[in-house]
Length: 305
Image 1 (cartoon, helix red, strand yellow):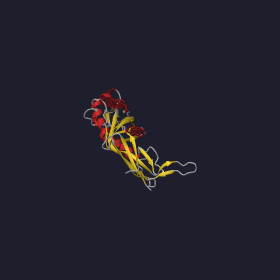
Image 2 (spheres, rainbow, N blue to C red; image 1 turned 90 degrees about the vertical axis):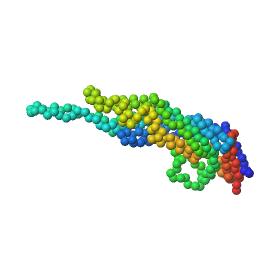
Image 3 (cartoon, rainbow, N blue to C red; image 1 turned 180 degrees about the vertical axis):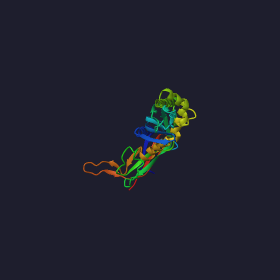
Image 4 (cartoon, rainbow, N blue to C red; image 1 turned 60 degrees about the vertical axis):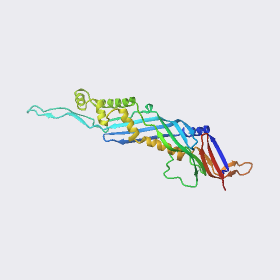
């Protein structure tokens, strides 16, 4: 039998969880080349909400944990093949000078078109996970791993003394897919169309180039290899090509299970502080274990020498 037993109610556990997750913010940026175009993202987000259910089978369930995007910038650069019209000369008999037509080229840049709209207002996502609570011992005498994977998301510095750490340990994590609405697709299409129109000069040259490429909207879909709707193409980039969902899931897993305990207990534990010239009274803690039922978290510990 354990020497000491401590119980934490579900309501108190929820408050502790709220204090922990409200400090989780993350930022990430990356880009991928798709040949004729380069697409990428620059994002920053934090977590809000979330309800915890302690269950009788020694598991916990977290639902309705909202991802709030402070920044969700989509970056797209397209290198359009150069198109030239005009040029060439008509040879005239001497002494009449040759007649040469002006040569005009468009899409000579690299990239020719770049946009970076912020799509944060168009996305709402939730995270849910099931898991357990686990106790781990932190030995301050051991060296910190190098590189330290927790360094970017650790909320408090590592302690200089031994501690028992109680972690939320997610086992299965479900992150909602990115599902951009039609308005986001329209925003991107309009931005690309305006950027392409700005490159094409006016007059007869414009008429010739538009005759070559066809409608600008269809030209954009051809360049990006989009069979249907731009919003669906955009969602597929964020859900699959960018790997952002895997990044979010791994980040949340590491944040709770490895890097930030929900509770910390000093070892040895101080029962009485130093006072009146007397030394503090501390007891060593051994074999800490934790479990949950449907009303509370229970921690049991022995006193060792």
